[in-house]
Image (cartoon, rainbow, N blue to C red; front, side):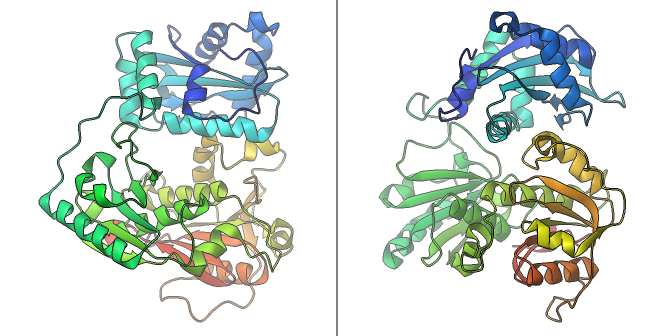
Length: 462
């Protein structure tokens, strides 16, 4: 457990694990469970009343229950404490009644941070949510025979490549092996900056043909694994958890993520190897990330565009894709997010309904908070757009963008929402992300043009 302020240390999964413990819960209600987790945190040793921690958690829960998945809740809050963060994960096979409608969860991860800064709180929260994102892994945590075994599962998940034993790998097909072999030869001949493989799981990568490639290797996966990549230098696993997208769109998202982390540049080719739904590899494409990716992630300095952090853009894209693929309660939902240049955007907007985000603190409105996802999805059914500040704070929902001259160059079938995106991005420095209700296509607009389109795999063989 964290005993001192360590806000300056680099946070990774191993650091997160050092401040995390797992307990079994007897409580069957949300309040009882949260009080039990607070008690397990041993706050008396810090001179902090458990009631103070509980009140802070309840104040946050009052805005919306922090259910991050169907079986997982992550209640969280910041308190006046000189420490960094403390996490207690409670599990109950029979479930804890958590939501207002009787929804039950089997895992509750309680996070409490010191009031260092909002960014630190969100950093820990995002890493915790990512660690527990896999439904299969949550099932294993719940069903482990004891807390010690569950904590060992967490340690195994956060183990470094040097410490873990080689993992069993799924056999790759002959076609995949031959294709990767030719991809390496092509990459060497063209002197590309990287090879990118889009797969469902790193275990399906044919590693042997890659042994002769000494350059950068990017693995884009829809199922993140912690123990299936060999200890190979300059290998980067990029998590794009959207198997419902086409192969090329998953590849594009992977390149966007790589560009945002400085792993690829704009003007040099990347050899991309893809396959249908990532099950096998059957196609090689040579792609140059190009000027548009540069614009999306780095901003236009000459125009004075306020830089939007890649994490905010990627989070908005992720929510948009989830709405496109899953909809809401089985029904397609069309919506729009407008990011950045908020003051200029609001001068061209008005509220269609009372703003549901008005009056809440910035921390409670951060789009990086995984607990806000269900709220975003619920309000997506409102007419109008979400207005999001560059730091990820949701300014408003149900916001009407006053129409101005649109574009005659939009593809057929795209209507008022996309025209509004063209208009607002042509007249401000904002980005707009739209979700088409009819097709589920996600489109990113900048400078009045569509710069990225993501389609559901069911709409295309690619």
